[in-house]
Length: 224
Image 1 (cartoon, rainbow, N blue to C red):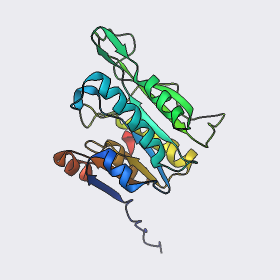
Image 2 (image 1 turned 135 degrees about the vertical axis):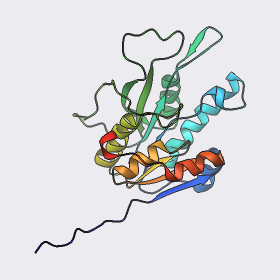
Image 3 (image 1 turned 45 degrees about the horizontal axis):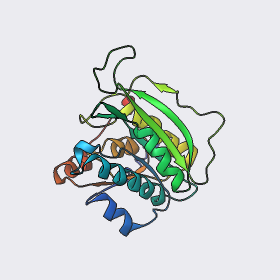
Image 4 (image 1 turned 90 degrees about the horizontal axis):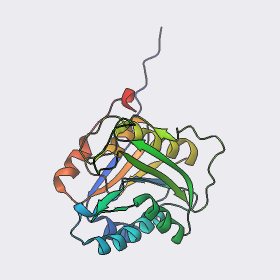
């Protein structure tokens, strides 16, 4: 006689409809959390480029400070082109993180288009950068330097579910995080991936419509 299969409860998912900076300042450090996020581009906020740079640097520091020292913050960021010059958002992440007392654990590249194609002034790749104030990067890291397949995009601005899977597995297996925190969760790609991989998820999103989507989005195990 076989014993009945035990159904474990699904990992929690908590989504707050709020302005991320104010929410992080009010909440303070989140025990057991590892941040996995993508900060909004200048086109998504009502700021001129110089003001957005300052906002971006301040926000990276807040994300780093939102997780414990022994945890990490992972950022997916694509460069932008403005007035004939490129803004290297990867460099901005590193600068802000170092100013906040963190150091780079790794810097990977996620392809958003097949390698070798012309992109006509738009970046064909995204930076995936992990920083921490106390952790050291393992000598062997099971994440390829170039992630060729980002996976399905649940939203045009979302990171792919396969790329998010690499980040969440690092947070779960290398950092030991019990919660994945995304202060700019959009439609909930990172949150859904975290739940699929057995980790609780905490998100913040300003758009009420996207909040509702973030609470219900699901991804299958074979996607991550």
